[in-house]
Image 1 (cartoon, chains in turn orange, purple):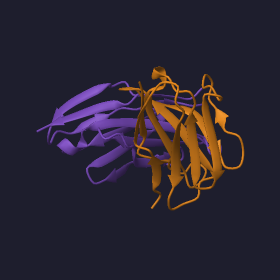
Image 2: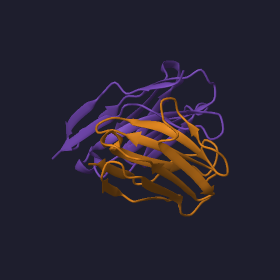
Image 3: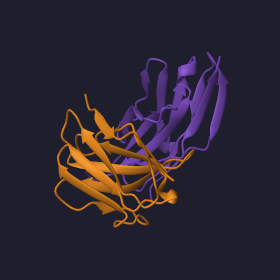
Image 4: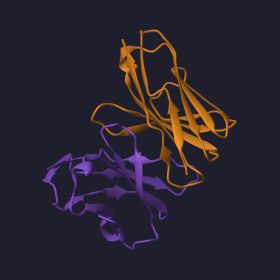
Length: 115
Length: 115
């Protein structure tokens, strides 16, 4: 149980393109999902907390107009990287938990490469 | 402020050796949760354990064991009789008691097990 699916797993696109990443909890409902970013050989850094039916909470230094988050249902959150540039290339990972302070289950991540 | 320190950046061992990965945390909360996750080369994060701040009992799961000591704010992870498949990056993480709080990750320890 507690499977989180993330799609796509790998994206390569041109600079200026907007890219949408989906995060789905397949067998449970998640009122809260989290989006992390990981640069090569570095740790995961929280970007934002996505709450179903309300606006996402962004961490300091994360541009909310650049990284649009939508959490339209209890099983789906999306992250859209708008007008992506090479510096946005990274590994993006989402997670979801079944309840407060329950273990977070992670998607398999999305490798985003902007040319 | 909360913080997780994994002082060991990289560890290399030979198969069948025991290895301990260190984790030291900082938090002002009396109620908090500690986690260990494994990230193999494929990138996905695999949940290993969650421990709450009121449960200092050590845990063993097969070749894995965890030593939680509040007195030293440490939550160390030991792999006995290591195997090549244990090669991965291991992250220690902390979350505080507020509902839906995201994880604060350490920088990770890269474990390489050679045959």
